[in-house]
Image 1 (tube, each protein chain N blue to C red):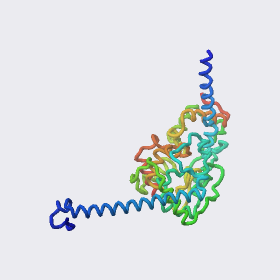
Image 2: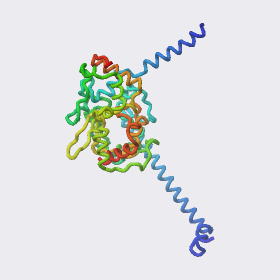
Image 3: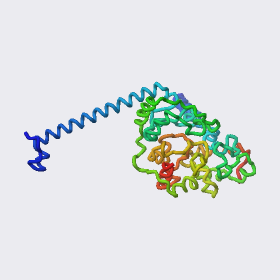
Image 4: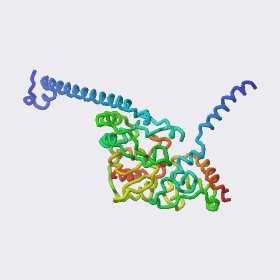
Length: 119
Length: 238
């Protein structure tokens, strides 16, 4: 029993360390998404100049976000706007973000919009 | 012993003692010249590195490769762009000129999407810029294969840049007489003067080699190789 505990403690510490070193979903959002969608999620990032050909989605609009399932959001993040006949200004992030990071972003967007997924 | 080769034909030209001597002399001279050039080059790089450190460039720019960043926090801890592959990325003449008269490449401050770039990069004197350019151009990456991409302003490249991938969403570029585009990425105005076309291709193909954490989305598996080449050629033509 004592040996088992001795073995488990380092494993638990490693798990905690791994968890704390992972980038938080809000940081992932601020780093990648906010450049177009804005730090507050209202679609007003620095890239949205007069030349920007479309309005990035405003994540604070509950009624719009409720029309989307979590899988809809995941799909657009991974495969880009063009994959759902929207603007290619929303790039595909499949070559950049991990599945875990994308899941985290879905949570961030739900938090911004205070919406629940379409069932 | 003979030093004139012509009298005994091609075979003698190659193998007579006289020609052998002449050949040895030629080899010796070439060897001496190449050693001298290498010594100068190594000395230039060493002097350039000394100047780089004296100018305190390392306070903002990392020249230690390969890339070490593993998280967004790692990337955000950097004060300026990494330079460990500068010799593969930049055109030498542009680099030297820019170090003397720096102007903002990024509309926003490095790593920021909130603060505008105030253009406060240190300007160097010509001798320091030349020395530092010697050093930076010696820093290369094996991930950049030479001679693959040539600048070409073809319609297909333009279509990919503007419509298919919407690169202009994050990057400024010159469209006729107007500079337009997004602000989060480095400006691509006159990118052809600044960047090595082969580096553009290598970066678009596998950005994580150079920048494991970056706001530029990876295109591998998203775009066909020939389209990445096409848009690399197009950007190189700016």
